[in-house]
Amino acid sequence: MPLVLRPPTTEDEPALRALHEELAPEGFEVVLADGSWPEVLAQVEREASGVGLPEGRVPADFLVAEVDGVVVGRVSVRHRLNAFLLAEGGHVGYAVGRAHRRRGHATEMLRQSVVRLAALGVDRVLVTCDDDNVASARTIEANGGVLEDVVPVGPGRPAKRRYWIATAG
Image (cartoon, rainbow, N blue to C red; front, side, top):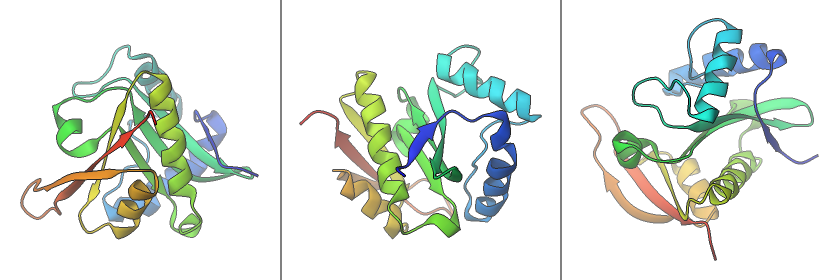
């Protein structure tokens, strides 16, 4: 069964909170809102519609990556860039749980995210990764990413590789 990207549901809370705890030591936040699960889902809906956004946020789709009914990761598809996203975050942020890595899930998650952004009228998608994240760099390059530059982001943090992916052939 193929990988599916879909909005989170009430039933996803245990899997997404567990994934959040698993990836926190890597510096990755899976759940991007605070509060009870109904509050998190309400925030996801607001961000998708672009209504009532917290400071510094842009309209974005928070999607669960699922294979055969199992949550394998999550992706954030940001509809546009602000200054922070242009410098560090990019249009797409994705994570795959450790037990599901090296199976092509991240590559497919990014591919589907680029298709979503193309449908929104984005002609060039910015995707970034830490300079020392070889797996993510390969994922981006497998999706046609062209490295623009590697930029420092602050003391004690790895530089960011900034790639652009064209959405039209």
